[in-house]
Image 1 (spheres, helix red, strand yellow):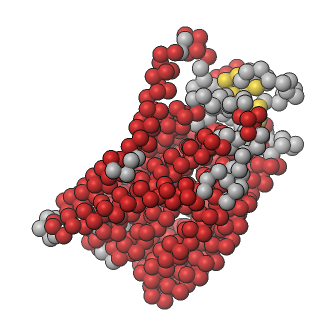
Image 2 (tube, helix red, strand yellow; image 1 turned 120 degrees about the vertical axis):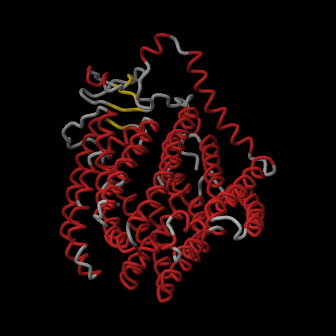
Image 3 (cartoon, helix red, strand yellow; image 1 turned 90 degrees about the vertical axis):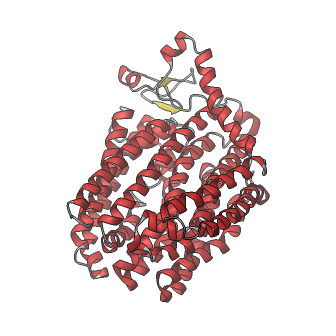
Length: 552
């Protein structure tokens, strides 16, 4: 683990670059498509994805996370997991195809039948790349994952815009949804160079399947909790209403979704490697938590204060009704920034059963809240959604951190400094908004308002709240490993260095394995014949002796 910090920071940098690029791509595509398509086109897609999203939770069955979280994974296990994912993908595609008539009848929209049938193919495309993506994540090759993710997004968006301009309506959105995972799967196959073998019985995947199954069930319950309101709005208020609500929801959650994906993948991989080292585990977690919160809070404030300008600039004037919903949903941005990192904590420690219990308690509370707000339309639902999330956040923190090295005090202390900076910066930005008033056009006004907010926030966060050291440490961690590698590597080190970091190959190794970049680990105890074991290369050999268990 000597270079774990460097790998984590470099991986985080790669994901942040991808985050910025994906954010620009998603916002730009939303700006273009919102002007080429109508609310009903987005509403029809939202109706279908509310159902297919539930099935999508089973396409992975948590097996990619299980492969990343495990300390040791054999090639036989990876191959077996691949074929399980392919079987699940085919089954989910068939179920989606069979559900198409029922979905059309439920919403009383005949167009949904062929739309759903085409979307069914996406399950197979996704399934084919799940274990290849997990292999790259386990190896902490986040630069490759970032390039693949951005490339697949660009292809999908380009096809959607071309289809929208050609007046294909909602079919343009369907094409984007199906094309992006296909391109991503091709990319991970090419980059890993790994060709799965045949599945084997007795490969020792029972614990992984149990972990993945519990994780999937937790995801299913959480998905119902966080998306039930969209089904309610679509069923009782129609396609236009869900189209407006869905675009507002997307606009609010684009930054947090990208940020959680970028930091979450890196954090989960790093924390999984540190689960037997509680001191470093706590240090890494709190730094990642503070980073996510610091980057999220100004976005929360911007959505709350500048919703009208934001909707006008990004979506256009015909979407003005979405501004109120954006403002009502804004608090959830900060709440998800607090809740999402707790998932890194619990998953990396293997506490998936606890996560399931939390989800089972929270889901009925959220659904009930949204039902109370439903008679008041999309705005009533948005208000109820934010209210339930706000009331739930403290009990959620207490339940997640119970018995771990992280305490409620740690979380509140990490929140306090960005929160204080946000309040002061938000006050300055609001005063600036009053000064700018109606004297400048919306785009320029939004730039000025946001500039005051972000400069004020980060100025106070770094120089007043005392978090400058955190960001300097990240920069030093990025420069240090890169500099030390270039100074200390010998020619032989360059000759043996593997392009796939974080995974070693122990046991029989052939030329195909060498070409795939799998690096031999140091000699271990004798392995069973034909038993290939993938291990972290830089594992701290004394961690287990010092700690004994997870220490939590």
